[in-house]
Image (cartoon, rainbow, N blue to C red; front, side, top):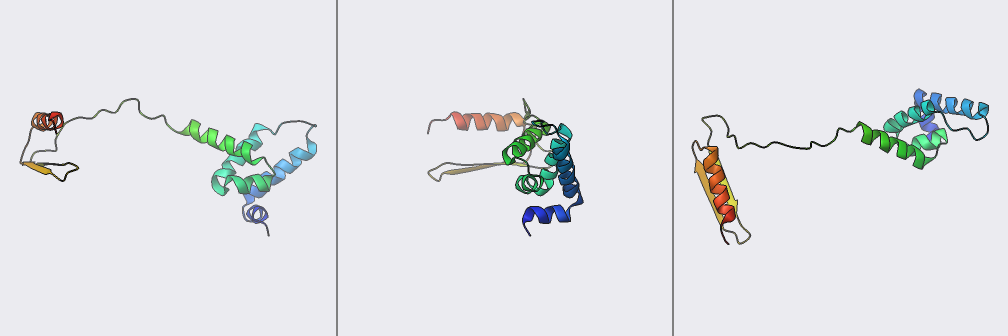
Length: 133
């Protein structure tokens, strides 16, 4: 049994959508576009069963279904943050700080502070980054 027929036989939602599209195709005027409600149902099913299976089962254009699924996914995705704040706050008292640096030649530097201030860490990092190689 082909995969699309197997999917339609095992999922009642897919079988109902196929039947609804068949009813619409039999009753539609020539050249009419598929109603948005049927497209929305196909997109929902494509999220579960995949675009290829749904397009084959419902006899829809694969590319159009894929575009609709992608457009809906992009519209639903939250936009990336415009600004991310980073602070130099250090962990609560009692914990120390370890700064480990190394370069391509294998030189390494490890500094441990029992209770550093953020300004000390920032000043040391700035001086190390600005130093000539």
